[in-house]
Image (cartoon, rainbow, N blue to C red; front, side, top):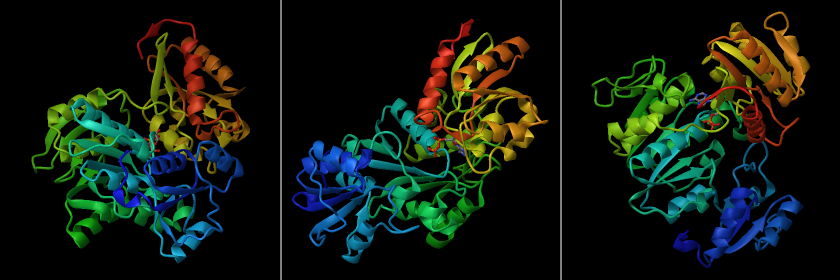
Length: 463
Ligand code: ADP
């Protein structure tokens, strides 16, 4: 990765040595910067030192000569309490930035697409990346998802970075600029880190302050905070913004109210593609992602036929309503990423005959909000720490049984679904819980589910 010339020979403090911090520190060091690396955890510091980084205690070191501070987005620097290193650095007028900033400064001639939102970022990022790749573009996909920014390949004028941006990263961007900036939706999340809902909205809206001249904003308008962002952008700064909706027709925007994606950007309301026919994008929430990806690709001058090809060949993301098998007529869907009731709901509305594997480490609020979907549940199979909470919620409303572990739940769900022979039967792992009581991560839980399904007997159809 070619580094921005002004950091060569300069001292850069790197705070936080997780995956992206370590990789950024290594890239900076290999590019001729003097790197002072620090992490609050001793074992993380030891691992970084073993990997060849110079450890400097940023809580006590004199930071006067530091050119800037590369800050890991996960570490609080404002709310709820600023980390002492942030306070010390800011007192000296030092900038705190994340790796996205350095990538943007390193490769300023590339085309940049930034994607944010409370939900759907990863799906939309990979979908845009897929559409552009299919259309023959040179593309690098990463950021908050997958590959850390400074591990992406250098791109020039013919290349496009498609970057997932968290609200934490957005607060740590100073001069990085985007040709297409996309906000999917805003619902309350991470409020402690942003000092409340206003701070969270401001962090998301900050992306649009980073549009390049002539850049295009794409904004979902199906929630009130996002609507306020688009109104502000149009009224206060007169920016061009494409509105996205799955609930209403939008003049001058892109919508998919009944699943048909309609492009009205030229005022023609042209039906483009039936999203209901794309198995990897099930549900209204994915229509929002598809509309946003469509608008971003159009804003990047991809022709409509190529976008449709990309949409219809999108392979989907693992652990998000991922169809992992069809056995004896029963579909098996891995939605392990659904770690709360809201995410579960998105999947449940897509199916009518659900054999539901649910449970894990419970989250606040439980599954009470899903009451209205219980008529779709043929039977629930409870696992993990949440078993008794969820049993109490389901009692008298939907049939359930206690399975303890995922292997038992998969076996029991299969037996029940096969015996009942319903044409639309779906065994759905959508746990509404964190995974840490029995698994290392939601990915681990989803991988175990996939392996258990792969080992089931029966006649298979391609998934
Ligand atoms: P993120 O990267 O923002 O966490 P993902 O694309 O990984 O989002 O999707 C995570 C979960 O969020 C999905 O399993 C689904 O339940 C839900 N989801 C995805 N897209 C949307 C959307 N546009 N609106 C609301 N929820 C969504």
